[in-house]
Image (tube, rainbow, N blue to C red; front, side):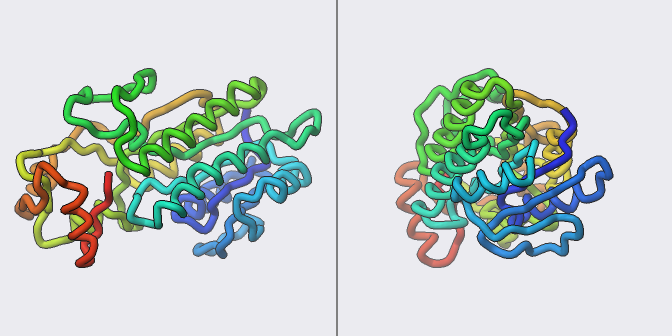
Length: 279
């Protein structure tokens, strides 16, 4: 189904704003409504902004009144250093549940929503020493979530899958993106990579996958234009070890974190202003 009447949650975020800009160029898209508690940070021409958070009653009224056929949820926080644990949980779990409730149509038959797209994260899989080299969409994570951000992402995705199971007439896409890079990206990883050295954990050379920010926008727009029911991993080709990243940046790896008690050491570094997320 080609989407024509679209609701974007988190329109003031980098991803929500960029997606709105992209979809504004599509002449087949009739209506774009962007919702967010904060004003959009981009100059949007065709997007109608509504100041609202994840209150399901208000969102449901918008969905029904505007006859929204596609909802794209771009709000997920995948960087634990971006907000407090409580705010991250409220956004990722409670907010997602409220948006899904709004997509149920409020008892109206027929429900105008035909497609829900959830922007998720490859942090869903976690990162343990004995994990497989690559995760495919059909694989389950072999370990329980090790960090709060992982738990929240797993719980949010569980809610999305449950919604899909209860609403067989709605196409549900879950898009798991790896770490984003690009001129518009400000994250814990880009902050660490901007240091004179590349900090690491003693004795470890972890693998990294990246995706360019414009490719993320392209994947989201593709999911709007096509039916991509199910779970999809999104990443650039290949894998880079952290040592290779350092080599490309021309910076040495410096093991500033011990292999044991890493989280406690990371907390100490955060106190002196170094943005080291739990994940």
